[in-house]
Amino acid sequence: MAEKTLTKAEMEAKAAQPGIDAMKMHPFYAGKVEIVPKCVVRDFSDFAIWYTPGVAKPCLDIKENPEAVFKHTNKSNFVAVISDGTRVLGLGDIGPEAGMPVMEGKALLFKYLGGVDAFPICIDEKDPDKIIDICMALQPTFGGFNLEDFAQPKCFKILDTLREKAHIPVWHDDQQGTAAIIFAGLVNAVKFVGKELDKVKIVLVGAGAANIRAAHVMNKGGVPWPNIILLDTKGTLHKGRTELQEKFKEKWELCELTNGDNLVGDIETALRGADVMIAASRPGPGTVKPEWVQGMAKDSIVMPCANPVPEIWPWEAKEAGARIVATGRSDFPNQVNNSLGFPGIFRGTLDVMARTITDEMCIAAAVELAKVAEDNGLREDYIIPSMDEWEVFPREAVAVGLKAIEQGVARVNLPKEELMKIAESKIRHARNETNLLMKEGVIRPYKENV
Image (tube, rainbow, N blue to C red; front, side):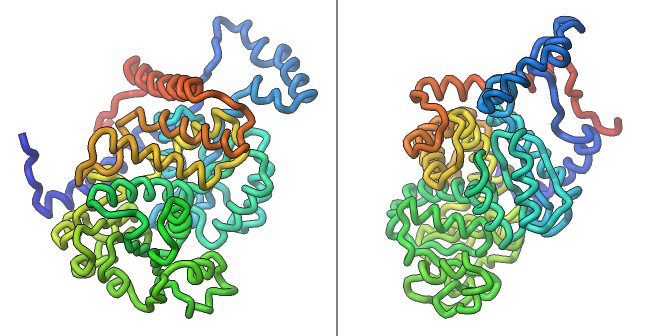
């Protein structure tokens, strides 16, 4: 039976509902994650093993052999979700406390989708050098860092410095995560409309952390630099934007690499004849206008990824002629959202104890993610899997782990079959644990007015 077509008012009401529910359910649960034991507690005498005096033995073993920390503790599965709250979602600089609901949500997704034990760490510090020092000091506890919602341009310095100095993998989800998922959606969307990746013209609306990294990943994935155009608040990036040379080196680099025709203009100008628009800019609606989408090429692909409100509503883009529309929201088809990437990518990274997360590891995850959707049959409203397709995450994990081994950044070398077994086991454990806690009433069912 075909689904009822919703009116615009009904679609807008549907889009607003998650926020309404969030304001009820967040205070009901007072947070989304907690710490639970993973070891047996048969009786109180077991605390002599897990704490004093027995715990001294593994402590001394680690002192003699620091790598033994991975054997005696959960370090290899601990990830810190670190933020200073300066660019939370599309809400801007709202501060570390206001960023906590997002970081807790991130930790929940890490656990349920990837079997990763993640901790929200919101820090009251904005100086990038001090943030780097804080992260370096936290390394003994964690197997990896997920940097989240740092404003630009300091987000580039923090990531680049930590990737160079830290001895655990460091990832900035707004850069690498967004780029990987965008690339996965792009691969399948281009394939579905019968175009070729190395021939499409791609316009990136917004030249922040997400689109800057997306441009680099697209290029490494097969899109020629001249076919990519980026725009910031002043218009297209081109070789005449010399004011960026000293002020913003990452943008200036793209001024020199992209925009083969050296096009000067605004979003409307850049979109004329474009095959693909990917927006990661100011939340809409209205940031991208329907008439601009009308000027794009036939069978155009439109990805307005801003949260919580996309730059243009999906139904407006469709009415304007877009063949495929994807957003960053889970309540619309084709969700191009980091939640499809970071749980599986970190799972694979941790399972081989990788020292870093390379762009090639991100591309491996994106290609595998795209293949999951292709295996299931591509449609206009299905160019990328959804979060409820659980096989996505172990498959991504294996692809990432194998690429890390191939690149020589993994501490352990395991065959594909063993990596799949490990990833599936850890992800199933996390899901079964949550389901069991719900079944037993340890996680209370939500009730209004309680």
